[in-house]
Image (cartoon, rainbow, N blue to C red):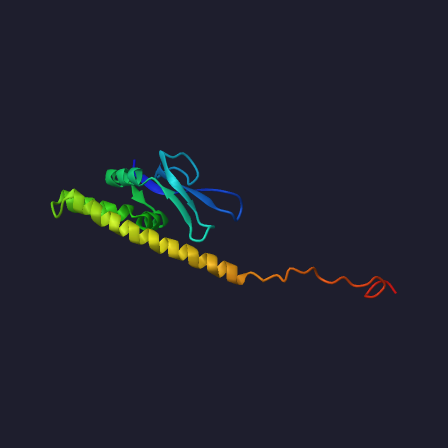
Length: 149
């Protein structure tokens, strides 16, 4: 049995919402799964991702293969970078404390970048809104206009 880390679709038509799951590669997309690792909502700006890093790292170390989209999500959340650092620790290139220090530094920079993107998207959304004058539109007097004639 080969395990895959993949997306399981939920949500209504044209409103996708995904669970990130570990499943047998032979199981159907929305079928039986082994463990749920998190969620992914592509409709928000930026996309909302909730992921249990530790569980994902354990499954990667066990040999589970992520799909292309899940690989991008794991990379975005730093799971693949953490796996890379821990491999360096096991090879003796540096110690565990140095690896965690590098990961925390990367994580802080990444969170700041995501926050900037979120604020920029919010500013753009506000700029697109039509400013209202606060007045109600004028009503036409009765009897004038394109009624029956």
